[in-house]
Length: 304
Length: 78
Ligand SMILES: Cc1cc2nc3c(=O)[nH]c(=O)nc-3n(C[C@H](O)[C@H](O)[C@H](O)COP(=O)(O)OP(=O)(O)OC[C@H]3O[C@@H](n4cnc5c(N)ncnc54)[C@H](O)[C@@H]3O)c2cc1C
Image (tube, rainbow over all chains, first blue to last red; front, side):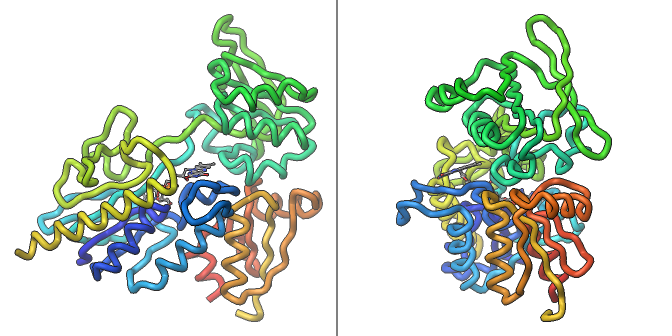
């Protein structure tokens, strides 16, 4: 039985790990990976102490710091469901392992939103990608589609027009990204923009060979021949494992008090998975620290 | 560990790729690194071996790992 189980190894969960270890709590960190969303970021210019640091470098530093402490780490597995037990909590993982703890912190962050259209799941990694900066260069010389209309979609388009044969930007809404980015699109000759078009299906046997889109106004459907589809339509909170246990808001975020308490005593949450107003590395780390200190206080009250 | 042949297929812009390479270096594992953004031959080889198009792909002898899966890499390199 652990004192504290930290679920999620992004900045929130890693900061919580450091604080828990320094309070000498018997701690387990279980996470799909180390670093979370920072794994998809190159330049970070707003994490205090570094005027500029690359995402992987910052994660290496976090990991080295956490590694100094004697906490148990299960990295590469995910919690499928977290349940309340008489003595605290039990997590069941995707690998069907079970872990028990007196308190827990949910720090599972956010993941890219899916389109939820036919072909998407089957073709993920086979032409469908959610990390344009990672996989973009593989599609050099090909025709591609970027789905979305915000900043991350526009950035993906700006990268891809330099190397792809042709780029199709498909957005369900008018563009919502910053004007500085959308202005740069005007010069691109190998770009076609489909505004107010819905992406209906991703096609291909084995690898992507096209998408089907629909004009939201006229209802007219079109097929575009593409080898790559970059989905950049925002993020959703990773709260599935706790959705039956704690209160979530309308967007699926875990609602927390200023003390990181959830609707269940002894269960705390921190970072992007919560309804904390700003989603930033520095904020997530601070929230993780707060949650661990609250869990420590709760454990002290238990022994009294 | 010394006898295992390790190959990394990566792109220069992919943060996960850098983390994989840092991790292997830190473990003292030597590996060949192919930049599939420039080397089309190797990109094709990567897609053939992994049956997918995402980076990084790590090949340890005959085992193929897609993405930075630390637990899997540890067990293959053990
Ligand atoms: C492209 C991009 C660029 C960004 N740039 C910046 C920037 O420059 N500056 C800045 O401050 N912020 C930036 N952010 C935001 C920042 O990355 C996030 O606010 C921060 O990572 C949130 O941290 P977190 O720990 O709450 O969650 P995450 O980073 O999302 O980490 C969640 C962790 O939980 C794990 N996990 C998920 N579900 C489970 C489960 N069921 N069981 C176990 N583990 C699980 C994941 O594997 C992951 O390790 C950027 C985000 C993106 C996507």
